Length: 181
Image (cartoon, one colour):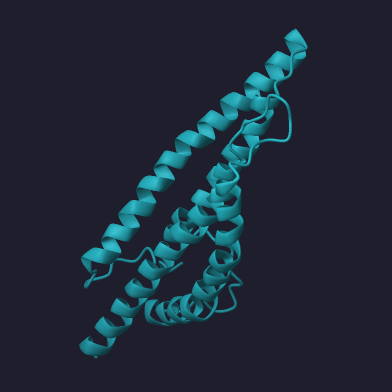
């Protein structure tokens, strides 16, 4: 199976693309620690409930926060490592240049406009939550619901930056391929 342009070595890899990819790589590694913390929290909840008949709203809500952090924050990391689901009609068997064209056009036509809409609809929602310092409706819950909603912005920004890197890398591969032919 050929490597996708997002993971293929690009001979003309601009520093900005490399910077964006390293940033998402770092975020992904940090989120790996958050996944470990999620396992510990879940184990603690099961242990506390089964042995001591004790429940904690704060711990229960922290599972939701950690899960959202991992999935929303890790979207750019997943794109960096070509882990998103795609309808693979011809992409897997195509050469690197054809894959680069699919990534370039898909990023420009579908991904960036989608992320723009997420940001356009999400930022006022986040802003209102932050301005009201929205907290949990449960007694003893986490008082930072606005932080949870801010993950919408983290999603749009991290995935958007990786989309820019993917588009730049694809463009560099296409231009380099055209220059060498």
